[in-house]
Image 1 (cartoon, rainbow, N blue to C red):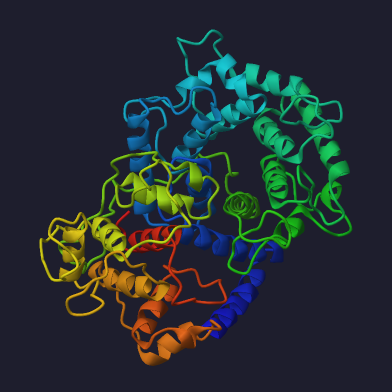
Image 2 (cartoon, helix red, strand yellow):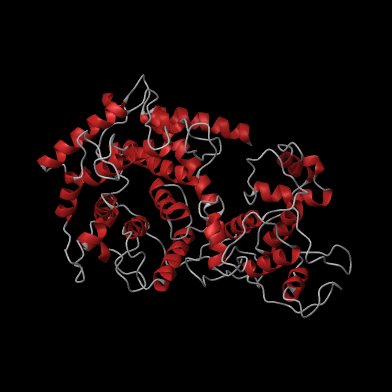
Length: 536
C-alpha cells in the first residue's frame, strides 16, 4: 500500500509539473493534505476555544481538504449551544474570543451576526473594550470583520463607537521604532508573531500612504530579524509559529516567499517551517520537538495561505469563496449501525477542567464532557492521568453510543443497587464487554490498553464499522510495534483495528498492551471512534 502510494505520488508530481505548476506548489500541496488529515483525525469534535477549536476549523475550511459537512455543522451546533449558555457573552474582556469565532464561522459559510439570536460581531464595535488586550484586539477585529466584509456594527452600549479607520490608526500608532510590533507597546526587539498579525490586518489598507510606509518599515524590520535558517526567534527561541504568522502575512500582502528580503543562505520561511514538520503531518513548536497542537494548527493556516497564493485563489482571510454547507448536522451515524445507537447531544457546552488546560487530549475530553459522556472526579478536576475502572469504562461507552439502558443481572459482583449496574448490564447485552469469568465482572478492576482496544472495536461494530481483519492484515498492522508479540491473541484483532482506523495513535513505538490505560487515553479513543462513526 505504502509503495503504491509513493509511486502514485511520483506520477502525480510528474503530471502537475507537466501542467506547469511549480515544484513548490506540489510540495506544499502534499504537506497541506497530510497536515489537514492529521488535524481532521485528531480534532474530531472541535470546541469553542483557541486550540482544538476555531483555528482547526478555519485551517481545514480554507485548506481545500475534503471534510464532511457534518464536521462543520456539528461544530456550528456546538457554537450555538455555547453562545446560548453564555447568553451571547463569550468573554467580558478578551474580545479576540469574538474575532476568532467570527473567522471560523465565516470560513464555513455561517453568518456570525445571527448565532442563536446573538450578533457576535457586535462587541467589535466597542473601541475601548476591543483595545483592552492591547494591539491584539484591533488587529483581530479588523481581520475578522474584513474576512466577511461585514459592516462595522453599531454598538449602542459602547463609550466609543469603533470604525475601521480607528483600528487601522491604533495599529499604526502602536508600531515600534524598529518597525515591528510587540504585544506590549515599545518592547524591543519587535515580535515576529505580532508583527505578522499586524501586517495581515493592514494588508487591505495599503492604498493609504501611512499604511504602506508602515508595512514597508515592518518588512525591513522582519528581514533584519530573520535567521540564517529562514526562520525567526521569539520568546523561547526559534519556533514554527513565528514562521507561520509571517508566511500568512507575506501571502496576504501578495508577496512571494522567495522575495529576496526573506531568503537567507538560500533558506525561505517555508524551509524553516518544514524543519518543524513530523512524519505524520503534525508540527512541533521548536525543531526537534514533539507534536504540538497549536503549532500544527498554525502551520496548516500557513500552508493553506501558500497553496491559495500558488493557485490564484482568494487569500486565507478573504472569504468571499467560503464553504457552503448543506443543511444541518448529519451526525446521525453510519449506514448499517445498530438501530439503538444514537449520537449524544451537547448538554453542558464549554465544560472544562483546570487540570486539562494544555493537555494533549483536552479537545477529546471536553467534547465528551460537553455531551455528558465522561465526568470529572467530583472535585472539579478530571484526573487525565489517572486510571479507569472497568465499570467506569462500561458507563462511558454506553453513554457515548446513546444505548438504552437494560437492567440485566449477570455477574455476582455487580449488585442491582450499584450505580454502574445498568451500564455493565447494557454493555454486556450489546456484546461490548465480557466478565472476568462467567459470573464475575470485576467492576473496580483497572482496564488495560488491550482490553480497551477490544471493547472499543466491539463498540465500533455496533456503530456500523467493518471491524473484521484477517490474520495477515492484523500482523501487518501490529508488526510495526516492538512489543506486539506481548499482546494477547484474543486482543490482537481489536488492537489492529484501532490502529488502522486512527482510534489509537500509531506513532508510538510500543503498544504496552497490559498497561492500565489512562482516563485521557480512553477519552481520546472514544472521541476518535465517535468522530469516525459520525456520532459527534
